Length: 244
Ligand SMILES: [Zn+2]
Image (cartoon, rainbow, N blue to C red; front, side, top):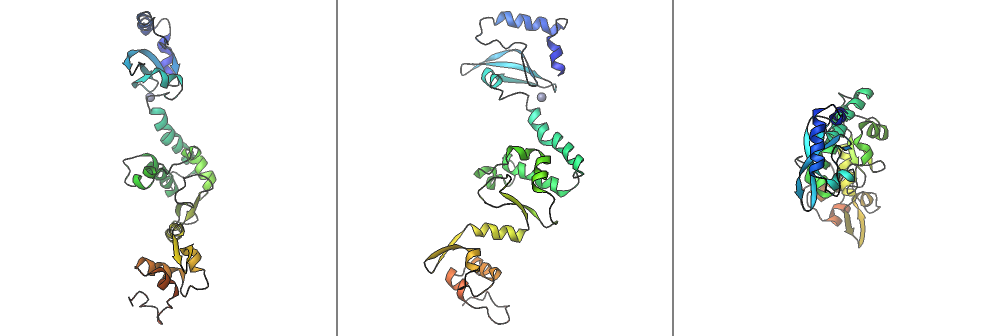
């Protein structure tokens, strides 16, 4: 907002702008003094790839260089401070409003966005790096909280129902680590008796001789799917995993 004052007639800067304007009269698109969101165009910075680059002053006090196209199509409307604020400041305000500022749900929400959008995040390769994104609405904590509600317990964290899907309403729920592991193995298909089913479906099959947990543990231990499914539990249970 303050930058609007930059172009007042009494402002010494306006004479600088006037000089700039006359220098670049021949420019096809003259953006001198124009405002784009938080940015006010001050002068020509040069040209790159045939596009004019403009020096812009941001309301926050920073300056930045942006090309004509990015300004005109609204792609850039701040030095970068707007996006950063939207993700932190506004979100924090919403959290305070909900009394959630100290609740781990805030950290869950924040990390969800970071691992999808911050390449430096340690888990980025498993999320953003493989195309998992957070929907636009959920960049607001308020919307996220309104859609997801409170966690049923401290043991619950956010789980994507379709593991290749995005963080968005309809694909997310609160789930414990066990439920999440179960969900992940859900997507893997196992071929037994010439049929393909996921682990959960097989554990519920009449031919399954053991519990879901035992079946999973055996698969994890490297048992063949058919043997893991059909071998009855050893009495006493403790030596279930013993290799035969
Ligand atoms: Zn700024």
